[in-house]
Length: 280
Image 1 (cartoon, rainbow, N blue to C red):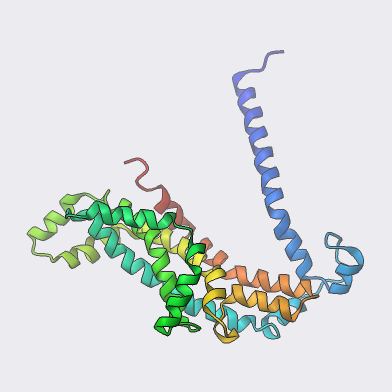
Image 2: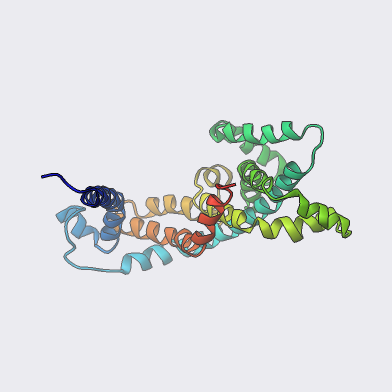
């Protein structure tokens, strides 16, 4: 019996849906396992194993991670570090992207290629030089040292992204503004910034996630627990509760909430920023 074209299309869609559903379930298994661990006691886990159903459900692990594990302090530190780094990166890289996209000067392409080349350098080889530099400048073990490092290291990708986005904005807009007497900076923040909001929102979402979830720079540049962000704080939590995996996992779940909230609220602009210009 020969299948019709519509039947073949329905079967194809069903197979694709089943495959995507399977991949989604496999991807969500660690998340489910983490949540299952966070609402159980350690005795229950040790006696019955990680993947067994809980005998008693408890949410006290979240309260323990929040108060006794100092997660409230670590999350506050993460915002203190992430928000200035984010705004500093977007402000500076938007200026760089505007200059490289709209001004033709000697060395324009060289500077652009330098930003691209900087993205290709593994940051691991810079850990010791940056550590020594922070000591030399006196910014080791404080918020501003980590904020400046994040701002500098994220500017390469952001400038590359915004330059390629702004170059698609018609030059006629800035020429018309110049005829009306607008200064170059006014053209930048009155024309190019509003038109680049989707790209800035996409970058903001990515940069917030990357900076907020950073661990290695916080480990290298911070010594005192009172300055550590939540990623480095979770490592401390593991030291304090080395046998309490339920408390550790509960803390990890609490640490993911800010990035999830940011993505949920900005996902429309994130997708628009990544896809806009694809048809140009």
